[in-house]
Image 1 (cartoon, chains in turn orange, green):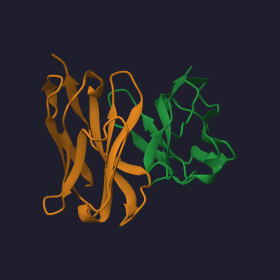
Image 2 (tube, chains in turn yellow, green):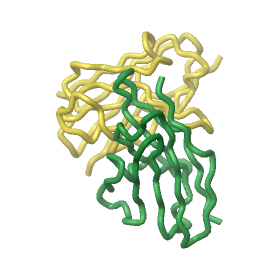
Image 3 (cartoon, one colour):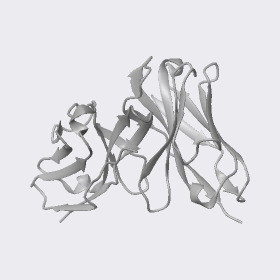
Image 4 (cartoon, helix red, strand yellow):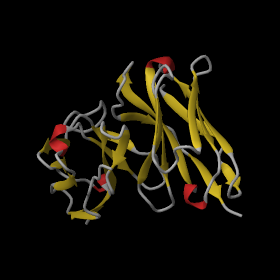
Length: 123
Length: 108
């Protein structure tokens, strides 16, 4: 079945780095754009980043631009989020999510979500 | 940046109709998507492109979008509909996905 499984979360000190991974299965990964979305404890959803199906375009939320990098390896069906210069306000559950539009230049809805991985930034 | 505003909470009795609004400047010109999130779980897409339902989503869920307000309607509300609901759009002027502030639906 269609599935997304995140990994790589944990506890990191302010200013530190972490790389999240999202393993995809059950669909043609290379045909769909992918997103990262986060949710701070007790708060709402916040979109973080999007990468086009072929990796040619990437978009970032203002809150993470210049610190986070989204990438993908279509040969490994895996999405990544490299997070640098982490701050306390980056503490959240990070979800990867599949875009529902095939081979699209503009993102659509998030039709499949992973279970999330927790990132805690604390000294 | 584009802002989507939702009421913090909506309460509804079982069997009645819940309406959750999502306000944004000229939101009627955008495609609106809606998500349901239950405690401790990942969000689930319940309505996309204003009024389409993904497979597996009950017909009780419907959506509309016009002017400055999009609306998610849940008919014949059940206890299992108790959750947080978020609207979402793609803002082409900033190349950003935008989520609404979220609405907690309580079934009385």
